[in-house]
Length: 345
Image 1 (cartoon, one colour):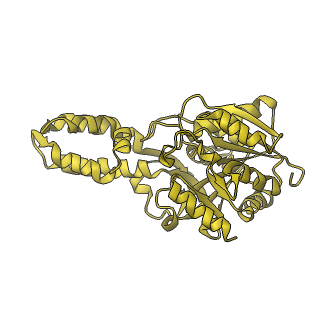
Image 2: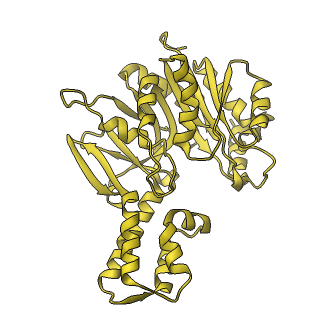
Image 3: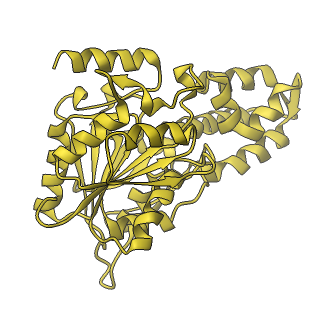
């Protein structure tokens, strides 16, 4: 406990971790120096003043429960029945705290995120010194090219996080619109399919994000232009970002926000509980992946005003001092790099 304000960690550990290649083991149960990843993380959080944990489980839930229970008694578990995104996972965990009337701080973090004590303490210190309702962790674009871009206003205040899948789909749709502008009647699908695969080389991502557009072009040699135009129009709402900055509400396409975004979101958040509960209410699955993104909470909180049209919530971003302060993994190779780093500490 810091400054007499309790801190609870909310750890999202429900994912299947398919890219690890072992369906029999939850990703957070892999070990670093002989200790399950999730236990290592909880020990780090406790060293920084966290006094309790809520772990969100789903895939191989009992395996996670057993790993955590072996070392910790101050843990509650919440179940995410379906994999509906990070926002949904956080909602499942926050419901436990809200039902209890909890009003302290909540450290929300993915179970596969390995944090050094220094950066957690820096986030807590930033919250205490600023009184922020949300402090979240950022890193350099070059070190984290697939992470969501942090959008700021003219004063440097964070106002939104835009996912790379939204940016890619937005650019794709703009390119398709340009292609259609000079076409007549019908269009060869081979050219369209090549464009789709350029932006989304991973087949599963292509099918999920491009949806009806991919279905339209994959099974025919050519397709009517009006069909393509209608399908593009149906996808556009997923890349239209509404945000409030510098006192104005804007509607901007996702790819138009990437220029000038110098840092990225590293998916580690320290909320005042009231701000977390308020932000989660706003979440919708109206994005490129059809999931509830926890990142959308940033945009929601930044856009809320009081009766005098002043920002209702105070948001701060803390950047890692070096990449190893915050490391995540999706594959065995990435985990091995983390293990090597931890062995050399």
